[in-house]
Image (cartoon, rainbow, N blue to C red; front, side, top):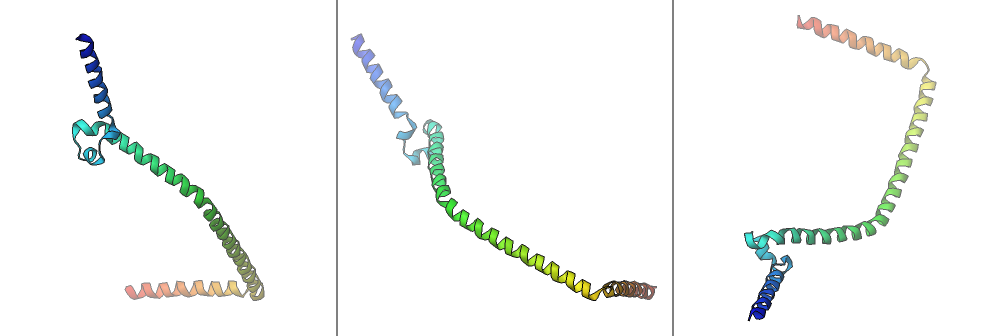
Length: 127
């Protein structure tokens, strides 16, 4: 009699452990927030979600590296073209400056004087 009650207790305990496992509950029950059910399922479902997302990210990273490599190469080529364009423009500006000689300095000084006189006229009209 005692042996049968002990075996029955072990059987019931085994059934309780199996039925209390978080993967056996449907997702809807865990999402409802029932205290007795949702304690273990929330963490388990979170880990399950994270496993899938990390696998997908790893696949995307493997497939995306080749396309990223080509995009980076194209970007570097375009940057080299821009830099060469800037150097050509700088050379042209230097040539123009040499051709004009000291005229640029004279023009700049005249412009500075004209803005100064315009400011004086503007201040005088306020009084």
